Length: 225
Image 1 (cartoon, rainbow, N blue to C red):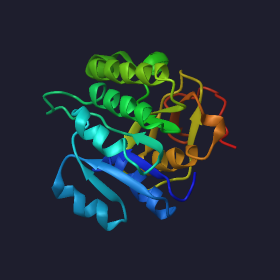
Image 2 (cartoon, rainbow, N blue to C red):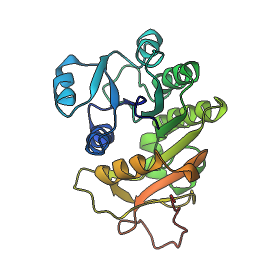
Image 3 (cartoon, rainbow, N blue to C red):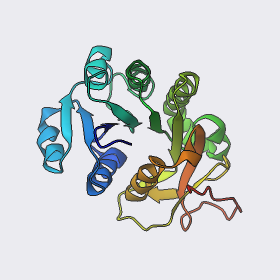
Image 4 (tube, rainbow, N blue to C red):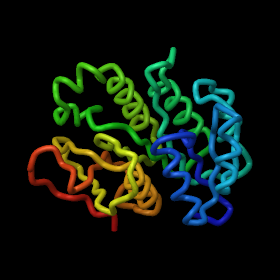
């Protein structure tokens, strides 16, 4: 990354996205964030992030934010819907971000998805699939669109998310059968470390806390260096 280039973050208002925002600014990286609500903008600006107001579901807003004279090195997207959404952004919002990233010549796209999407459907219980099946199908469509886009990508699928301080025990694996929980702050650390890791290019990785696995299955941890 050059000192002039930005990291573009979608989903910074809450959850994993907010944790990533805090992690990246602590690393003194230049970050720009797309936010729907002006009410959250001042909180994000306080931690040193440039805010662009817009909706990921509006391709015009997304292109205005990403296709600019300021080079964007990496786009990170954590966007996903909440049950009250009329239209969930899991696929259409991410599709807009991916298409704009292609247009802008972005170097890398990191998509935070979910265990249960794509090949990791084998890890999810029938109960989880019954509740989240439609959401996971949308996330899978976003993953497939990213893979087909030609962008250098990293797809990270966290397990069950918890809002606790980072444990430092978050790990990545290419094994789609692994499932467990992980704290959002640990996902943020893993995403941040993927920014400069060539090994994660064009990889799909599950993210869990090694001490919060469901079941005692042996698996190979993915090393970033």
